[in-house]
Picture (cartoon, one colour):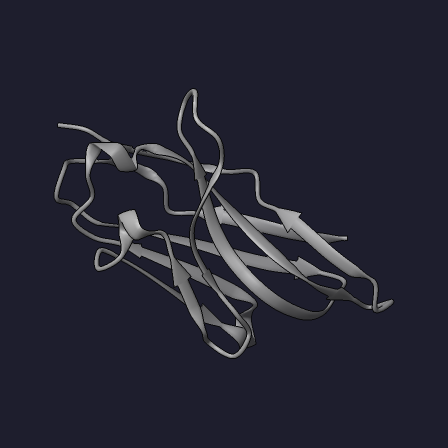
Length: 120
C-alpha cells in the first residue's frame, strides 16, 4: 500500500498564494509521475500539473505562468506553488502518484484531497 498525505489548502484572497504539499509513503519501490488534479463542484476532475521522475513537467493552460510544480525525490514529496490565485481556482485539489511497489507491481494512488478556496 502507498499512502499520499496532502497539506497546505485553505482560504486565500484573489491574487494571493498557497503552497500544497503531498508526501508519499508505504511500500514504494519507485515513483514515476506525481501530479495535482482538481475538481470543482459540478465539474469533472482535471489535471492541474504533473512532474515526471526526471523533472519534465506538464501544466493545464489555465495555470501556466501562475503555478509551479516541483518534487523532492529523496522525500517522495511533490509541491504545488500557486500564485496569482483566481476565484476559478477554487476546487478540491488531489495529489496523484504512480510507480511500482516493493513487489514491482504498478500502482496509481490518490490523496484524500485538500480544499482550496479563493474568495474575498
